[in-house]
Image (cartoon, rainbow, N blue to C red; front, side, top):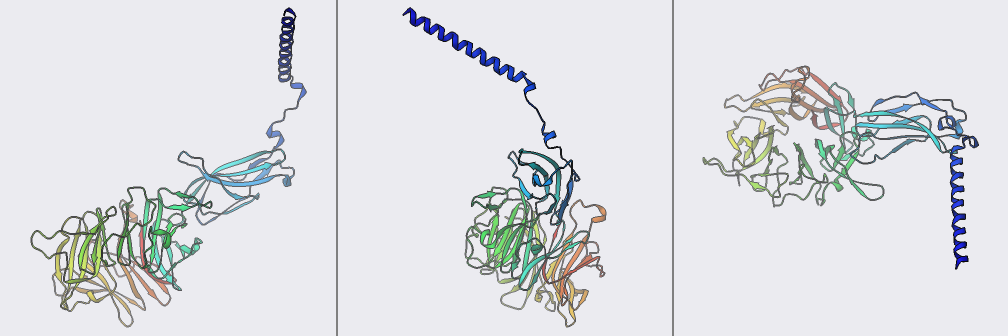
Length: 510
């Protein structure tokens, strides 16, 4: 027993001596700097990078950079890498986008507007060390405020863009590498924020994008939704609806505040912008209705006219039904089951209330009317009804527009040598129609009264009657100064733009 205890004691002593010895060895290894050579990364890879700094680039331009590399010995031993990543992220790791594996960068900018970290990295793969230079790249869109002319060429729709200072980008859709819409132009609407499309990733998963700007573009045979910064495609017609309609007949679209409305084949669709959504159109508002293509949007919804029952309806972006207007408490004409057909409903001002003129035709006799409309969702909408004198031309014309301030309707009259711009004054006088301007060899296709944005600098303020025409040589866009708040215009245009193709619609993005 004593012998066993002595053996155990001796064993513990030997273990202790071993531990002390090993610790002394570690200590001497740490302190013994004379046994090793320490070389910094800077000494192993002494290359310095220069030749580029923070930069601002325009979408669809090409960024070319040749880095200056000093203290380079053998370039063939190195690997080059250019990449970019968003500089501002919302709490997540930004995804790097590889731009080039060559020394010189030549990069066609297709990013959305914003700021990005642009990085050049030079790596020695043998030593697995690298040097890099990072700068800030600010991307600006080449399309912003200005005029967007929808046009048709060879049975397809594209867009020509004219900036507020007159610079033009032709064929915006195809210039951005996208496919044109089938058919002729109908309308487009700009959504300035809160668009949240769901995109398909290469691995089959989906991602919901947040707070995007979008163009909703409608032709008579197609719909496409584009990113308003770089014209990347969000949705085709087939992807735009939760349930694709049997009939593809886009007729109208519009944006008011955060709400979007669309008409396809007489049915009404909407997107409610104040709650999470996919940026897609849900089911059509239920009912056996077939609405006229014209609509009047406002703070609380949209006013429409059912051509089957000759009835005014209203609905909202968040609502699921088509609602009747109340009857007039003073015994005025009923807005339901009327004895008139709608020719046009022309928006004057959108808001609360929204105002419009509705040009109507009596079903039983050759008589036309101008309904003065005021829309605020729950109120009786008809303010006044004026009978159009029998000799007036306005109700029989196809192209009409109205004034933001004067009580009038602009219209075009066809003559042998070209269209004539005329005005119908909605006042109770005998001579209500007068000529404003002749357009020899041209056909008027669209008329709108457009003004500068609220708060624009004094030198940018305008109130223009915009007239879009076509001829054998292409389209022209005229901007005429409106004289005060009258129907009259200065007959010499303040601006004229032109382009190729057959135009059908123009949108002002303010």
